[in-house]
Length: 151
Image 1 (cartoon, one colour):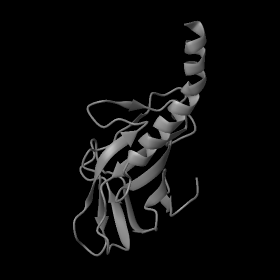
Image 2 (cartoon, one colour):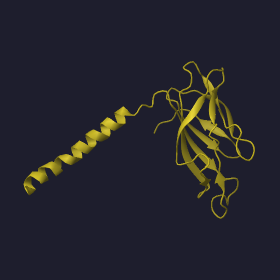
Image 3 (spheres, rainbow, N blue to C red):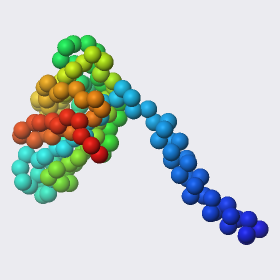
C-alpha cells in the first residue's frame, strides 16, 4: 500500500502544474484595462510616523477622449474601496486597478476619480492607448503615466 502511494506522490507535481496551466488559460483578460499604480506620500514622513490614508472612490472611470462608453472598475489588488480604509505603511504604496474594456476605436482616455471623498479626486488626462491596455500610473504632486511596458 505504501509503495502505491509513493508512485502517486511522484505524479503530484505534474498534476499541479497541469492545473495551474489550465487555470491561467481560463482567465480572460481580453478587453480589460490594467493600471499598475504607485502612490507617493505628500511629504517624507507620510506612511512612517503619520497614519496617512489613501482614499479611492468606487466611481473611478476611464473616459475615452473621443467620447463613448466609459470603462468602470472591476477589481482592485492591494487596495480597498470604501468603506474599507487604506493606511500607508510606506512612502510609496503600490496597487493595481482593473477596469472593463474601452471602446475599440478609443485612441486615448482620461483617468477620472469623480466626487472623491474629502475634496478633489485624481485626474490624469490624455493617456495614449497601448496595444496591451496595461499602464503604469504615478500619483504624487506630479501626476504621470507610462504606456505599454514589459513584465
